[in-house]
Amino acid sequence: MSSSPADLVREFHLAFGLDARSRPTEVPADLAAHRGELLAEEAAEVAEVSVTGPLDRLAHELADVVYVAYGTALVHGVDLDQVIAEVHRSNMSKRGPDGQVDRRPDGKVLKGAHYTAPDVSAVLRRQGWRPEGG
Image (tube, rainbow, N blue to C red; front, side, top):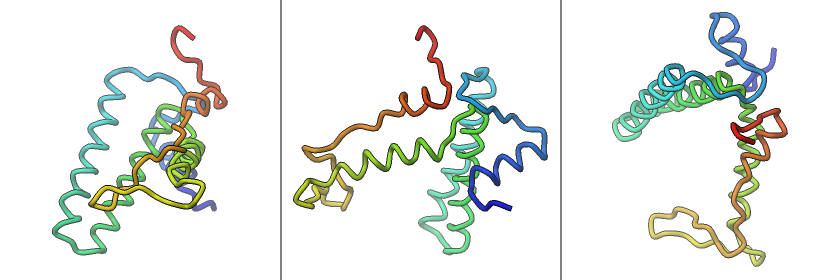
């Protein structure tokens, strides 16, 4: 059995009769709102436990966020692994050709002069998405 988050979450959705689409699709507003509420709930739990601990609970809550995020992508028919790869490509372009990295005082990596934004629309189009009006 695969241990990829996408495969595990697909198995869960299919086993429990939850929505699972195979190509990017706009979903009804009530379903989209429900998925947003689930994500917000999980993110709030991460925010709380990241301060209060313990580490095992933080790890659990982080996994829940990823699980629900992959589920939300599946409900919308989005191959999230491919989107993450495109965002990663973009994030790596924040480093200059000399290897230098610009950071905020808190350590966040900033977009440098060589940064290129992710083209998520192109990734979704390769997955079969046809935007409304497009």
